[in-house]
Length: 328
Image (tube, rainbow, N blue to C red; front, side):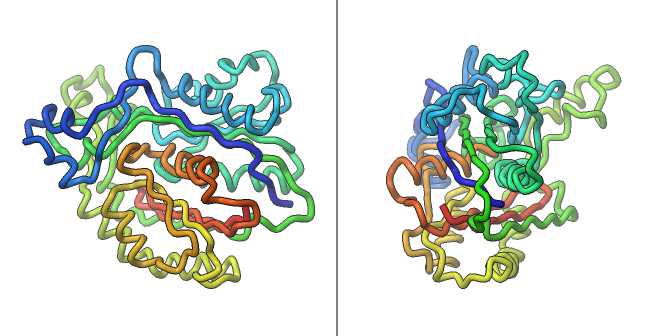
């Protein structure tokens, strides 16, 4: 049993920061951000724009594209890099915003930071195979701006806020979910982290230390090296699992990690017939929302057509690599 992507949606907050506005915020000359990070603009949540409100707006788009009512869902999977709040999860909040608060429809979160959407796709596929669900909604929403430290540009200027959603339906006797692979190398866990907000650091014991670790920290060079040295072999194993060669891929939909990461992928994977989806310049790295936002862009612009073989690929904090091959 596999599944069919029946609808997608993607939203960004109303407020946008241009690269020159970002330059001013970090004390750099106009053009510095665009030159160093290839960011033209990105969206920033404000006011009542939360992960669950943005995620619900994207979910409504996806449901409308599929022609479904919210009540027809069997499960809602939250796939956020950072939840709106620790308890309860974002999926529960989205369920209530969809008017399903008394429905009993299962709603839960999964987390693999930037690869959360990919993990949620596989969990949905497993649920379909076990015949637990027929229709699923996956919502990925991240408000990165809540924890950025602009004193470190590489860990702040590239991130944008936004949400995306996908609705899926089980397909019996199909083999469209060709392969899925996820590998984690925890020796580089410190390369990308948000240390506060869990149970390790206690605000009532040392509030200044807690607040200092409530900002996102990233060693971009270490993270890139940890990913790049493992990527070629990872891709080889993923394609072998799918029983395909690289030239059988029509379109690549990657996590929008950075301009450098996307250029690395383009150089090392030129075989894709329709190229690689790149929305980074006007979205930035939207954490878990990046990949489904790129998927939505691919579908709505017509670059992804029914029958195309698609490669999802990306990396995340951990450090993890994830990928999947899907016939759309």
